[in-house]
Length: 259
Length: 283
Image (cartoon, rainbow over all chains, first blue to last red; front, top):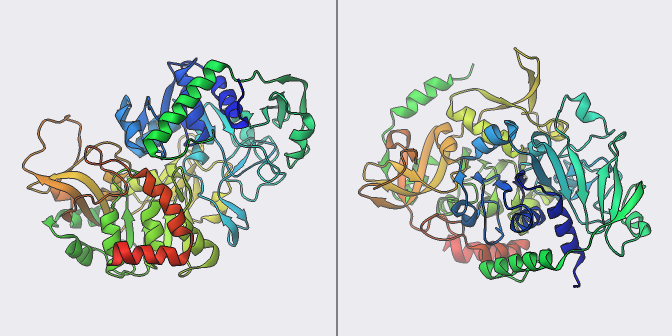
């Protein structure tokens, strides 16, 4: 079965979720990956969106973080301060999904500005929940499309802490959660080096070369001693994902999203 | 020294809730230069009230909102705001808020000062305001550059453990406006579905205005834990059917996702934006 690079990325991210995980979900790729996991190997995953919906089981992917679908299919809906205080800060969420406009070699993220903060070239949306999700969840998965402009040597702004500018900041700041343990792109999977916390390539998606990853990474990409090949999406995974996107497109009256 | 928070709250309690029409509610409660919070987390965004503020030509407002959304994109583009306090300024699931970007990147239609937070900080700041506290503290902003660009983000040591905690000033807006499903004849308000920070914003503000889909004789069977704002905590209740469109009102109408997508094109250029506002809001 043929598949797109975006489908490979979503499937690889979904597989990393475990049945029983309690997952803080963002809109877009994370939402697709989390619901794919729920509809395949992880039926007992608990999805929490920052709009306050706990244990939601949407039939279609929401366009916004607060679509009615999320509330109608949730176990319960709580106020936004409660989400951030009791559930996130209280340490009850095992994994958070994040992305951004820029990521660096230590998994730090920029979703604030391109250019200088006071004279931005591009004003991006900002933190949203990310800044505290990054330190409050047990661990973090990052999902982002690969590209030299997004995988950068130096962030224009550090919105959201990964392993810090030197890879040691989490420990220095007394943060006990793990931070980014996984970065899934449309080309490869990266995981932090146990010594330095630098994100290194541990698996290449089928047909992707080391050279292609290097060309699309703004820092000197490092590779694990043994680099695996990512298992391609199975027919069953693709079927569920495409059904989900088709239902979503019908519901929102838009073209089928590519992820 | 600032007026104590408890004093301000007692003053508010002496207010008598009035049923007003939308024009009069905005005319009476939203003044030039006010700090204004129009809340509603994706759900129940008070668009009708925002449009009335635009029509009445308010200026120099400080707009507070976690997710500025299309309503603040419109208010900023129409020149009502001098300052924006926010935590996520995008069009959800679609992309940029072009009017917000134009104001920040190019100063159109005028310069816009921004005070930028995270969601957790904003939620805590509203809660602290509702609780009559001067500030909120929480485990936040660790390792982020945001404290470098926002002087309102400070750190304090926990007096018991020494742990460094983020601290932000409470929000005490001059006026908060939220939308809800229904009010009863006495002006008590019922909010259902994604309740966001509406309760916190209404109780944090000096004056709270609620627009509702309808007024009913009674709320009928409901959970004992339903979110209800008592009339005596409010300044005004306004009947504004469809007052949250193109956002939604759970149980009344769905989010107009197609309009959120269409807004990207409408707001991208100044002229198409102004034409749309003229035809749909100012008329």
